[in-house]
Image 1 (tube, rainbow, N blue to C red):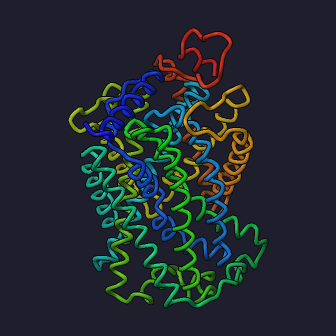
Image 2: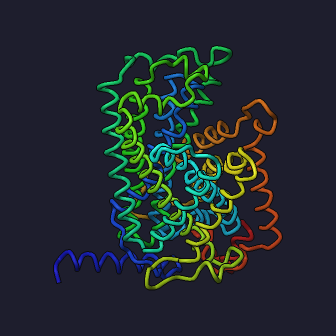
Image 3: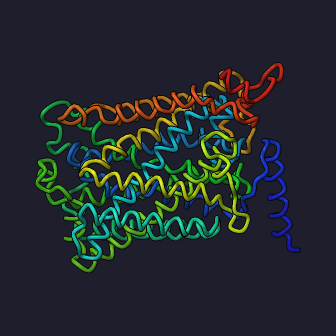
Length: 504
């Protein structure tokens, strides 16, 4: 046996022993390397999907200075990623946010955290899949109407489900291919635009070019800042598959940070190239050029080149849905394994042959399809259904960051292979402040009609209300004896983890 094989076996044994000490025996195969784990987070983050989807609205709201929102969000989410890194290093359990919240605070808090995050993930899968429809139309030369877009989205979700059923190794390979294609595409497209389609110099990045002239520019920039907030989540997916990663306590925190570093540079680069290539900021701000990305790409690449670029964009959408669905299925499985949801007996079933939870994956495909089908009832139905998705994910993040801060103040000292040391408390506080500011901005009332202005808040209120009714009615947090709240040191052992969750 080679030295590398012996080392790998030792790491597997050590990983299994650590997981057993946390109360779990994993059926997953540890087939995911550092780069595979990073690729999962990167393709979930997907700079191309985020920038191309929100560039027009952000440029129209804030002018070229909106690019700094991309930088601000990257710094803020890097702080969050380091907090998550400490938690996952100590608790490398499948499901990410749900088990982290469980160990940091308790079973009840974990149930609500996972509930909000799970529904936000499902809505995001629907949103990204639906958004791919327009690009299918551009690539194949047809107008993507509502029904056509729905069919494309459903087909995309089903194809991705088949791939994810193939196991961790196949999913990681697809994610890595998506990462390479997206990064090469971003560099090639951005570089070409800077060389051939640059209409402005760098000084425009410090000007509004007329955006927000009717009032405070702070308000205009806050609206434009949504592009940054929507870009930088995905790194948490690295932890969703913790039981499939070799040496997760060291590799996952590193992969999370790499996701922000590389994804942030790619996002800034492609946003910069597009901003400098826009022929007229005034037309975008006035609404005369409603799709500046298409305008710029057609001018720069011509008909054939434009379709090549769109093909790369579709690869980004595809790999993004692969990662989203994988993350959602692991969260569902983690919930079911602790008997925290209806149908747990079904959703915690595991395929030994493929080393995946098949019914959890099926649910992660079926629910987004249901949301997409509901969109047939109205032209704006999908927008309304998924409006809470990003703020919901931020709220899920915030609940973990808050739980980590509470645990620190009660004596928790991270004991994993990655630690922030003496800076942990400061970074935790600043990360929470950033999350509060970002969530407030995303939920801030905007729009002409009252239901558009308060759509995010209303959606979030419904989700939280339903979750609380189920939590206090069905009391799912009492169904499991799995450890909860054990990150906080206690002078005397609690009678049972379930009681600890109840107290929390």
